[in-house]
Image: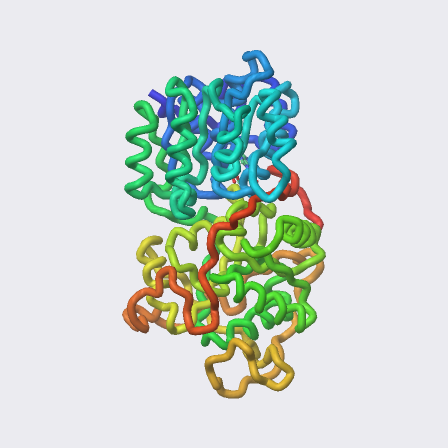
Length: 477
Ligand code: AMP
């Protein structure tokens, strides 16, 4: 019944004031998840959507709710969006404010790391939409003023991530406080059994929108693997940055400690870098993100949890300095580039002890990721003047000095034509040459610290203009 494909937002029968907001954002055609989810959700149906980050899922759940809210009286909180991280909450709020800018609908965010008072005020005055992370919302719900008795619309965003972060009991407690007569929209990149179970109990005859039958990064992302000794990862990154092959990048490490150390090494090499992770204060994270977005930093080093909500428009490169422990994290990380069907490059540095994990990821993707040779001279530079790399585990053979300078003109700034030697795959993939069982979820080596965990405190960050396809301060396209 909802199988019709819509090529234009105007075909979706959304309220004209929302169409104006959509137009002002520069969105022309609905993304596949929007085309499939918006009509049934506008009609009041529950929804179970599996769609990966970057698919346009935020507008897919916001628009039908905003459409239904427009005609209702103000002064009552009727919609609740629950999302795993404060960054994501802030981004959803930003997208809502943009979409609803020609409507009277208002939203407030509720997350930790910032004062309770303004959030309490928003709850007391009945702001139309609350966008919340679970922990802080429950804090409010334990106070006398805290209730969700008027909520008619509930969104559980990135449900699988909330599950990973241990929020499932919190979500159940929150849902127990929302009237049973409601519309529930659940979005999740994957549907593990716990989510399927939640769905069966919490959703009523949901329409299923399944755009990700298996986890896969958006098309348009060029993925490349560099096989590199653990100790050569930093020199390789430095070389890619110095040669201009990579102009700027969001770089993922598996632990906070590795993020700190890498950022420090890059700064030592004269490369502007900052890091965001759960151990950094909200203002430190916000500052780092703002500097990166404004083009003042070439590298933002991040852990999975901290990076969850980051949306830097059309980020050119995502670099997996460490192979993510869980295949789904690979998709989420890589989804930071090629947002909304643009193009992007995802480079993954794989040390021999990470090959097993890489094979897990490739199994999930259903294909082999292209292997690239290291660029000439990469690894020649040491991060320590004495030639001893802090990270080093290898005593690699001598290499030539420095990477060749890119001769790309200014028109190419901010966007490389791809990683060096792309396509010159280094022969057959290392199939079966795994160094052992996958290293899932464990930190490698002895010095990497504990795996990043969900941040306790929650705060805010804003993203750059939603949906803008124009130039950016970084010159990213
Ligand atoms: P999401 O998957 O919701 O995080 O969205 C990814 C990015 O795509 C965000 O920057 C959105 O603003 C943008 N976006 C969402 N829908 C559209 C659309 N129909 N056309 C162009 N960009 C969009």
